[in-house]
Length: 526
Image 1 (tube, helix red, strand yellow):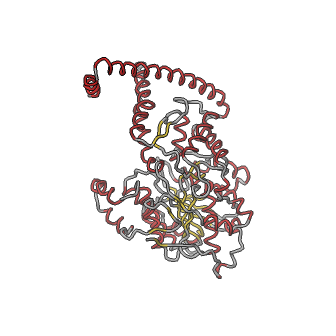
Image 2: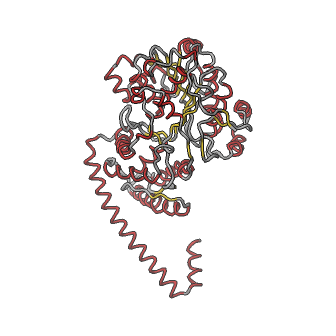
Image 3: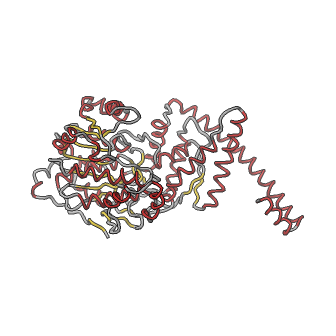
């Protein structure tokens, strides 16, 4: 069962006067409130609005004190981020339009002070909500507070904002995964009332909740997907008169073009895996190479969000429009091709510090995975730890690999399954935009060239995540050549060893007979 349906792209009479506004013109003299601004997508959103819509009145960013830092200190640090290089170079005065408001999405009324709350009520026209916990294995209570209760508190504030024209909620394409085809609709689960569920769970102790979590989550692969789906349901049913739209990106990865090609500042999701492959850490993974990966460069959902807010305000579509921002429907990239481009460009632009020669084995079989993990991960790790202990250093490699392999397990559900995410609404929206707006706020995924994208992606990880200076590339290539030689020497030694072992096993089978040989192998397995 679902609530929603086709979006009616008709202008309402009361909005006829704004229908002719371009996106840049719409944001002029309007103030925007953003949650999750310090996150990966949040930074790109703030930078894009400032650079492309310089007439914006003010950007209010929800920030909470963190790690002993005040909000003012965090704001100063935020403004110094390299992502704002272009803005500072072109129009440095625009940075003064950023205002931090102290708050926390886990608290009632977002933890805003009465004065800050009134400031938002009186001045804000557009709200973007991107704050969320993205940990797949988050405790259910924590995930509910962040991903369901947070949006609920924000919605209550939006109902009070005097001049609100658009509320854009960032969800995920990976909702309702019990369906093979996922449409641009808000699906409704009649068995769950999000508000009552939160009230019920608030009264449970952590141990009881942990026991109940599998039953509550049901077929959802994790608490992240479960709670993001509940948030959509809650917002749709409780929105009242709030002009609401939902944007569902898939696996968000490095920028294709803006703020600059390959920009990424974290090791989350696919980026962490790609980075680990480049370092030679991951050498075997559970992945179905034939399935579509459905990654999306971060600048695409950001541009879509900005355009969606404009459309909500100027055209007022009926219902709650849902915009799926994925590539699988329009420009599919399989995991096999992702592996191909990743390895090609890591070998072309290696990082200066590598544990091993970049290569990765993909398998769908658990036994194959376990065997290759022992051979390629744990056996070398034990050897390195023994060497470190012998030289008076602390062993770390077995622990590192155990942690790395466990970290990838939550992603295996997504690398071994495939869905058809329908993404028609972004195409319809693009047709409502001027040619200039389409170019400035691009989100047509059909235009992505995956080969050139991955070249910039690898260079971006190298520069912004690994902090490798471009001048270190000759040294990195020299290290890569050395590892290439070591790899082939070791492969030769292992091959000779295996031939020797199998030869002796075969001779033993002939000389001692099958029954004695069988007993011998059973003893070895004890």
